[in-house]
Image (cartoon, rainbow, N blue to C red; front, side, top):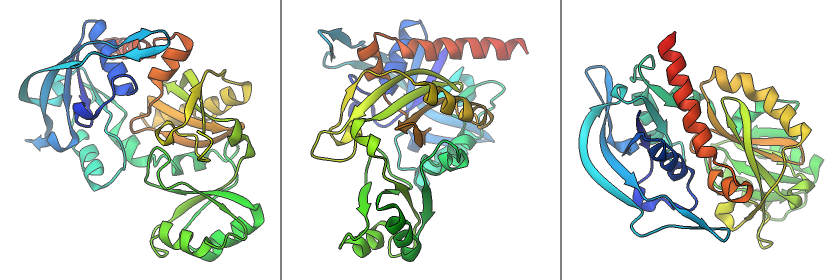
Length: 326
């Protein structure tokens, strides 16, 4: 197979952490060609999506005494060519948020890939329709009590009723801008004004879940099915559990309640073409659905001895084979 990965500049990636690298490594080991590009290198020409693609060869990381080790340099770049993306067997959209104008325009360009010829993971329409905070709201039985608003008085009323809440900007990633907000906070007005840009942009406010002290679980779903999980724990100096904010990771099991949540959302994910997804669960409640560039594969593999990248690539192989037979 020939696979294209739309990623952030490769020199910025961490081969010991980034899921994109884990996926590319797995594909390469299975004998597939790996090509990379960036969102700003996409074009539409004569009604088809094209990209400046560059061949890449990776030196896989090694797991030594519980730690990943990478050589330097860990990749070798080949020639670049302007290529129609429909000549690829699959295209992975793995650019990190924020989902800003440039990101959205890239998904519009990806709409011009003939999906009868090429598998696109995740669907550009699905990514556009699935804000990673808002998407969870449709699963009302799975989420904590939540409002989304730019109105200060509505937010104040909710915070006073719940006592302790978490305020989340709708477009950020990796815990950026998430704030703990409680009733009686003397900074309430400033926090809300700054977060909503003076009432112009809505934010999400959720009941604080005390179980967050025990961790924030990331579960990886492939075609709606959970294939692995890890627990993220705060550093102690920050209430957020995100790895990007200094949180640590620990092995975990997927509970019956979490399997139930996965089952609730699976069919909707498949309908929206969201095949590789990471959900966040705290205390048995779904808090986010990550569809842009979900991470956690490296850590799960290290903790559990799994090879999730291989599972993803084998699913791609089987899906493409099935599509050709139809």
